[in-house]
Amino acid sequence: SLKTVRSILLYQRALRRMNTKDYKNASIDCNEALNYNPSLRECYLLKARIDHLKGDNYKSILFYRLYLSQPKAAKEMEAAKAEYEALKSTDRKSVCRER
Image 1 (tube, rainbow, N blue to C red):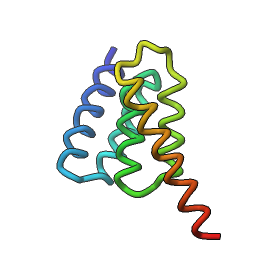
Image 2 (cartoon, one colour):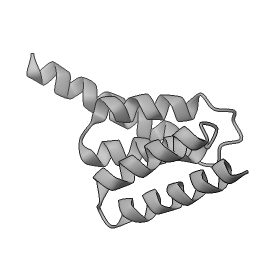
Image 3 (cartoon, rainbow, N blue to C red):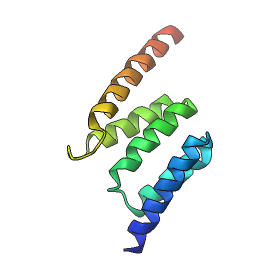
Image 4 (cartoon, one colour):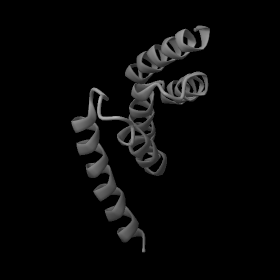
């Protein structure tokens, strides 16, 4: 369908934008791609990575959780789990330091 094609194109553009460090627009493209096709698993992982690069660990953890809750057929499941656990422990340490 047209929505599926649009979501894939937006995902690919978000990936290119992330690679050129245009995190703001990459994030917007991910959001739009997910609006067209919420089952585009790879986009949840890309959004988590972009938010982490932007320094928004809260959103990043949220999107890692959404990605990891997808069926196990997701390609980068093990890498995403490792990134998620590392980010969670880093985020907890920063919260403890702020108190």
